[in-house]
Amino acid sequence: MKKTLVLGASTNPSRYSNLAIHRLVEKGEPVVAFGLREGDVAGIPITNEKESFEDVDTITLYVGPKHQPDYYDYIISLQPKRVIFNPGTENPEFYSVLREQDIEVEVACTLVLLGTNQY
Image 1 (cartoon, rainbow, N blue to C red):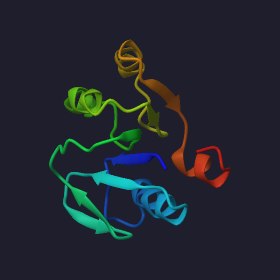
Image 2 (tube, helix red, strand yellow; image 1 turned 90 degrees about the horizontal axis):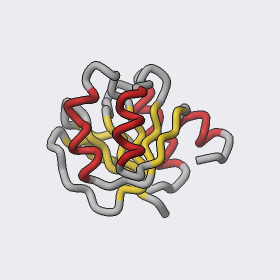
Image 3 (tube, helix red, strand yellow; image 1 turned 180 degrees about the vertical axis):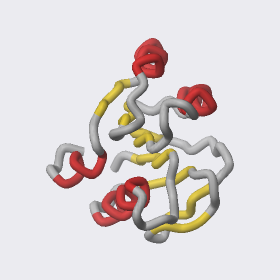
């Protein structure tokens, strides 16, 4: 199983990051979560510290382009295989940075990918 980091995680059940955590857990995917506030979603703790998570395969991004530069170095340091840019997070500048690091860029909706078994 491939570990996913939900970056921009929220305890608010109306947020898509919250739904993504629930769906990942339902699918049996290993999940870690980072958000502005600590909390818990579907039994997954949300940390607000930039932890050095091990073996992160995918980062699914729920942080808007305006705030993404604060996370560039952090995301690259985790050396994920891919970063999913969910709707509203599109950022061509960051795509280039990631591709230079041989990190796959996917502009998609995590919820759709999970719902159609394309995750």
